[in-house]
Length: 130
Image 1 (spheres, rainbow, N blue to C red):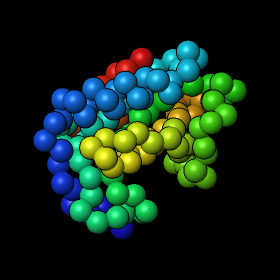
Image 2 (cartoon, rainbow, N blue to C red):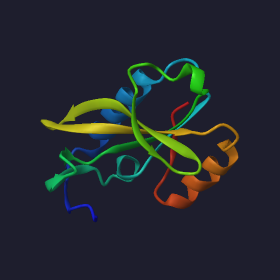
Image 3 (cartoon, rainbow, N blue to C red):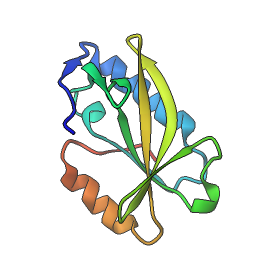
Image 4 (cartoon, rainbow, N blue to C red):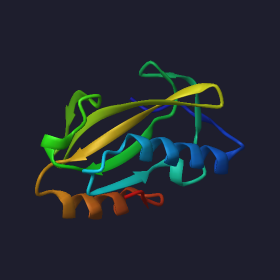
């Protein structure tokens, strides 16, 4: 299923700063590394022109390296995983009166090097937050 087009927000600097602040606020001390990637780092962030998977706002993608024992209880496991990550929801942040969910790709043990290489190849500009 393809994502719909987005209305790109004009205030990209403010949007980016708000996303970074929110992402950092939900990361516990035990996080070894965290990388923001996708449209929130490429000045291309906005809201969908029509709902996509019950979301109006585009999602915020954050790759997180943390031991499984230290995953915060308020991160909701979304029952989705790939060979190198498990997907959690870290909540949502309101930007320009639209709710945007943060998707946490929690790296599986032993897959940290693969994850670092993979996010560089995904495109955009991965931004190290921790």
